[in-house]
Length: 320
Ligand SMILES: [Zn+2]
Image (tube, rainbow, N blue to C red; front, top):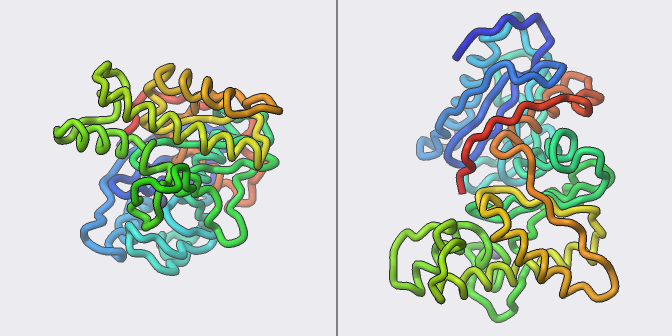
C-alpha cells in the first residue's frame, strides 16, 4: 500500500464488502482513487470477526492519508439502511449499527451492495445523466438496482431489486431461495455453468465456456438463460419504463453473445412499445467501491460531489 500525500479531510474511506473479498480505497473530493486494496472477508470466523476486519481495514486505509478522513462509506450485502446493516444471511449480521464498523470518529454511511454499485453507475458510469434505468449485474446471483429519478430505489422495506427471484418459468426448477422458477436459477453465471454441467454429466464447467460452445446441450442451456432474461426484462420494462438497461457482472463479459440474443427476444416480446437499449456497465469491479465513496461524501455532508468526476476505471477481470 503506497502512502500518498493527502491533505486533511479531502478524502473519504470507501469499502465494498462482498462475501469472499472486500475492496477498499481512499477517494478524494475530485474523485481520484488515491489508493485501493483488496482483502479477504473472514466469513468463516463469524459475524464479529468480519466487523472487526472491516474496522481494521478502514483504520489502515485512513492511516495512509494525511489527517482524518471526511467520512466513511460502506457497501454491504443484505437488508441495509444508511445507519444499520439490518440482516445479512451470508455474513450472519443482524442489526449492526454503522458506527460499529469503525473506531474512527467520522460520519459513516451504509448502502446495499448492488444499489451502491447502481449509484456509481448512475453518477459516474453507464447511466450518467439518465434518470431512470435498471442496473443488472449478472454474476453468481442476480440482483438489480432500480434507478428511479437518479437514485437507487430500496422499496418500502429495503427488499426492492430482487429481480433474480422473480418467477420466469412457473413450473420451473426450485431456487436456493425456496421459490420455483426464479430468473437466477436459469440465468446467473453460476446457474448456467451448473445446469450445463448437470445435463452434460460433467463437473465445474463455467458459464463462459457454455456461452461460447456449439455443443447442442450448451446451446439449449444458454437459450433458456436468454429466454429467462428476456422475460424478466420485458416485465421490468413494462412496469417501470427504463431509458436503458445496464448489464454488468461476470456474465456481461460475454458481450454480443449475451446482448444480441437478449435484445432480439426483448424486442419480440414487446408489442406496443420500443425496447430500451441494453448497454454494458462501465465501472466493472470498481462500481461498489466508487459508490461507497459517494456514500462517504454524503456522510461528510457533501452530497453534491460525484457528477463531473472523471473516473479512471482499470481493467480488472470480474469474478463471476
Ligand atoms: Zn429464488
